[in-house]
Length: 427
Image (cartoon, rainbow, N blue to C red; front, top):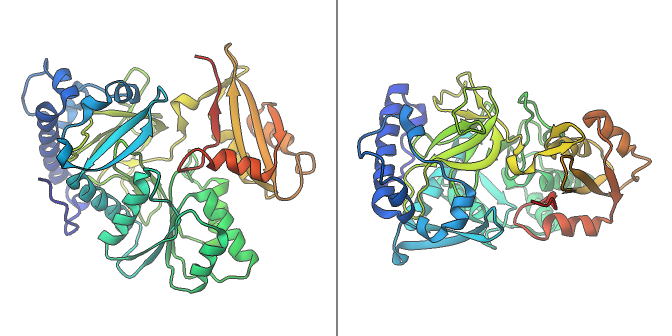
C-alpha cells in the first residue's frame, strides 16, 4: 500500500534520484494495471513483462476519454468493498463516466494537494476560505479540503454561496488564503472593494478551473484583475478528475509543478508522438500510485507545453505552461483557427461586462460563432464590444445581449465549474 508523507519532497531531490524513483513507481504501476485492471490486462497482453525505462513510456498504449467512456467498468481495478468514494464526469460520448477512488487514493489526493499548497507558500499558519463546492461529485473540492487539512492549515468550507456570506467571513480578518474559480474571485474582489472591506490579509489565491497565464507566461486580463485586488497573491493550478494530480505554481509563479512521485507527463502531437519543451501539444498523464482506477498515458484533451528552463524554486521536474485550450473546442472560422479563450480574454478586459458564453454551430468547413454577453454597466454599443473583438481576433462574430440572470444560469447552471463554451456542431 502506498505511503504518502510530506517529510521529503522528491521533486527537490537530484535528477538521478528522481529518475530512479519514477522508474520504480512506473513499473509498479504497470504491474498493478496488468494484475487488477481488466482493461489494461487485455491491452498489455502482447507486451513483454520487463522493467521499463522512462524513455520507453511511449511503448505503453494511450488512453483517451472515449476509451474511458466506452469501457468504463473495465477500468475499475479494486473490489467494491475497497472503493471509498465515487464521482462522475462526462465522457466524450456524453455518458457519465464513473471514477472510483480507494482509501489509498483519497490519501494520495490529500498528499497531492498538500504538495501544491506547500509549493505555493501556504503553511499550517494559514486559514483558507474554500469557495468551491464539495457536493455534486466534485472531487476537486474534496481534494482541496483534504490538502488544506494535510498541511495543518484551517479550512473554512463556505462553498458556492453569496458575496455577502464570503465578505462577512473575510471581514473577520482571519482569512489568509482563498481557493476558488478566478472569474468568481474577481467579482468577490470587486465586491469587497466596493464595500470598503479590508482584504489585505489574504496573501494567496489558489485559482482553479480557468487559466490565468498567456502563452508568453504573462497574466491574462483576468489574472491582472485579480492582481489589482490582491497584488502578488495569484497562483494558478491545473488538474482533472481522471488524473487525480494537480499542477500548481510555486512561489516563482512560472508554470505548474506536478509532484514527482505522482505523475509522468508527456506533451504529444496529433500523431501521439512526444514533443520537446516549448512545443504545444496535448497534455498526457500517467498518474502513479493510483489503486481504484489506474490509467496509462491518459490524453486529457487539453493543449499546453512544457517550459524548458529549470525553475528557481529548485524543483527538478517538468513545469507545465498554461492550458491554451481544449482540442475539442478548437474553432475554425473563415480560414482562422483559434480557441474560445481568444474571445474571452478580450471580454475580461472590459469593465462593464458581467458574464458571457459562446455557442458554436455549423456543419461545413467554417464554424458559426454566437457570443452571448451580459452587462452590469453599459451595453454592446457603448462599450464597443464588436470593435474590441475584431481588433484582437480579426473576426466578426454574431453578438447577442442577454440579461445577467440568463447568462449566470447558463454559465453556472449545469456544471460544478463555469461553462462558457457550448458546442452545437454536427458530427
